[in-house]
Image (cartoon, rainbow, N blue to C red; front, side, top):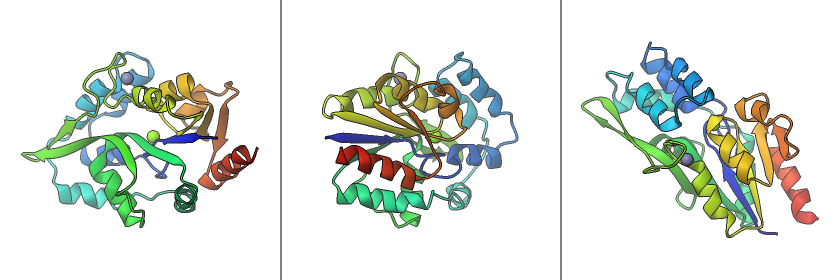
Length: 218
Ligand SMILES: [Mg+2]
Ligand SMILES: [Zn+2]
């Protein structure tokens, strides 16, 4: 069986959400209120990110990295990822975060990301303000990085889509396109898809690996 694993980064591979940690540290403004607008379906993630990152009036890369370097990944991801590599399973990271910190966090945890496919947004600093670089030019959901479109394309070449995630931006691709959905227990994705028969709540990657080993054996 030809599996494709589509995996979110923040709050899924990492134990906390890097974007939220950065916003908490770099602005006193109420960025959480903007998340609520996304939850209510009033705006897409693209508009939300513009609002939220625009709240930071001044920062430096040193400051950003000092926060990023405290982000921990789920320790069970390391073995999971080497199992994937050993078995030549297709794996991609789909993230609404920034490639700059994703690669840095993976590197700090001794994960070689040179062969790892990552589709995410990115950022740069211009005059000490964060300038966003969105992956998606435009889509019908006003996504910053349209995970739905990525998974739709991947689906053409694989028998089954395994989706691993935790948050708001994972709901649409998981619900519409996945064959098996692994959702961090008690987070937005799990809560939203509570009654979905494809949903498996997880708290570490060892559980996912065991499940997938069984799936591949049968
Ligand atoms: Mg997430
Ligand atoms: Zn979209």
